[in-house]
Length: 261
Image (cartoon, rainbow, N blue to C red):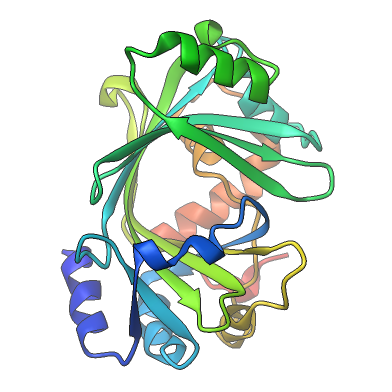
């Protein structure tokens, strides 16, 4: 299993360890994000190179804990189409289950016209409908009551923090995307979704140069939007076709990032 392979690799690297309780200084609520699609074989080569400049975040003694997310959208998929149509201001709404800690949060992510990603969240309890409704109404242009469950994701996550505390990097693998009740699903067996998260005013990412050395460039990728485009077959997805093609070729083990436009 891939999770065990990566765990075994980490046991033979020289990463320092940071408990998740120590990461408050790198929880950027206002941040700039860059995402990369990285073949698993390159990830395995890359990780030992990062141990000089990064520490591993451990949560309840787990280095690659599992996450489960349930995404919500309007019946017309407004949030999906805002991304597809490249609106400068767009939202995502999800409930995220942090398996290692047992925490569950209702989360809203806002992408601003300036390129910032702002995340807000509150503890989730389905019995607290009034609080949840108020939160959604205050943080988004939507009403909680009008949102439907549209997609789920499950993945393992490795988190690294730069020794300078200037950035946080997540590596998501074993990613499974599914529609409600698992009617349709897609698994990313050979690709890791890497996201560099840094403060808007922070220095340049250390990892960016390492990825360039492996001929990997950033890409505009969203688990939610790409998942919808993959699994809702009648959904308009013209603007996502280049990234869909890249993802499928990479996941089949035939993609070379030098071939990108």
